[in-house]
Length: 250
Image (cartoon, rainbow, N blue to C red):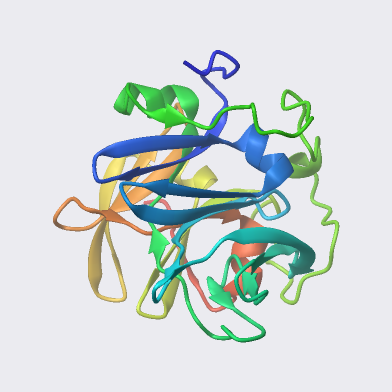
């Protein structure tokens, strides 16, 4: 299974109706969008290498299953996609259409995991995984933006300049609860004493889970159900959510 992947390779992964699937970042780096279906649920897996953001949306709007493509345009350094049905433009991090017929329509986000192949496969041994036989000639062993995540420099300007509290490309996990946004910097989670701990955002109790070896985080609610969150570079989370809370290690 997926012998081209190493244990430490990063994947964007989902589990829907007991079916797990992984989408390697080394492929998403080049193509940015995968239109897929799991247990009759149409989904769009979208990764922006410039913002380090991976999200999964339910891609049904009404009775239509939207099929997405990369527009080649950016907003605040974040990928703008378009649906082939109406050619409306969509913002990945806003999760909504910003032009044409579907303007202001939002897509439901599905909980996803931004983790390592080794960690995901250990949790779901029978997981499916995206093949490198994509129909395109790409050298998937090579990063499309080599060195970018180490540099503070951005390729494109953004509206809100992030505070220098963290490196521009520091990874954070962000969550939104009824209009209140909170970020959990990986650097701080790594220093925190507990791998899992309770927190409250806008009055909602949550449980934050940190995996030190995989350098990945996710959130569950009081019932143990996965909560939607987004892993992003610090600058990207801040520019879209400047009025946000930031977790501090105890």
